[in-house]
Image (cartoon, rainbow, N blue to C red; front, side, top):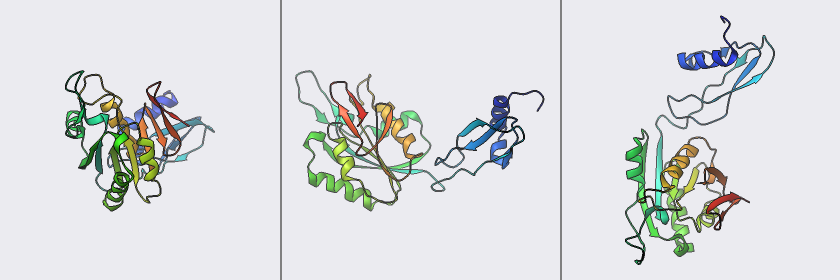
Length: 229
């Protein structure tokens, strides 16, 4: 090993691609475990190192992939994410979805299809609207589903989507419109897309820098953030 530290051995193995080519890596005093995570093609699952016997070998599982190509279905429903405020005295309106512009700016390399289902403030959504969202999610062929949604009733829609099998569904939104310079929309969108590639089937919210399972989160309006129940 040439006097290299265990962490240096790990780093060198990752850089050289040894982790992807071999099933075992000798690291004195450490055990390497590949974390369970869904990875896109060409990506490597994260590595977790823990202390173990000096002569122990650890078998590294091959990363799991969902499909040959990553594709996400995006449904937009309006909400603050897509709101337009013309001036301080005017009423807001819901504009064209901002997701494509944000993804173009980010230079993403995955495929996506976008459907603009609704253009409403989430306080105006009805049970019929939620039934429409659920029906569209169930009918689409993609397994990875991203929904942009107003923050006031996002948790209610998440609850209405529970029980859909074999799909990862992540809802996200924004406290400030994506068209504003100081908006949390780009961060939340990136958080949601990253979460889609790591989570098991289920319904989740990606807000305030965290991933919450549906039914275990609420919006703290006074603090302007989402929190676990």
